[in-house]
Length: 105
Image (cartoon, rainbow, N blue to C red; front, side, top):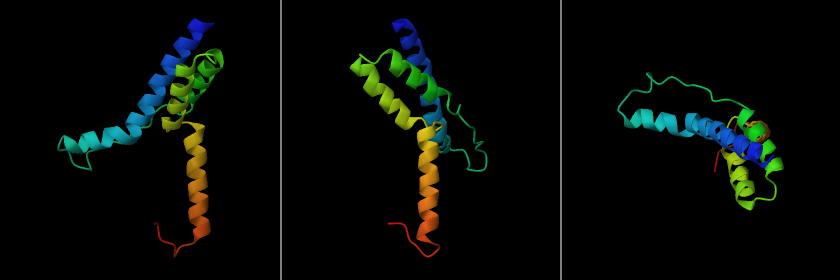
């Protein structure tokens, strides 16, 4: 089962990294290459799949501290996962509660 844990961790890490890349790295690289904002095509990563695979691997590799903590980091950077979805919903709710005249600090 340990081998399955390593494989699911690696594939989950790939998807989490791809989601992070498409959300935060791809656009600045496009601009650094000298392209215009209008020429950029937004793409989506693979939502939820990376998170599910990392969680499965954490259950299979729970006695390995390195995989546990790196898996936690992967869960935090996976912009297609439920943590980011819940965070965005909370952010929108708090913005709505703050009202239209509020300012960001």
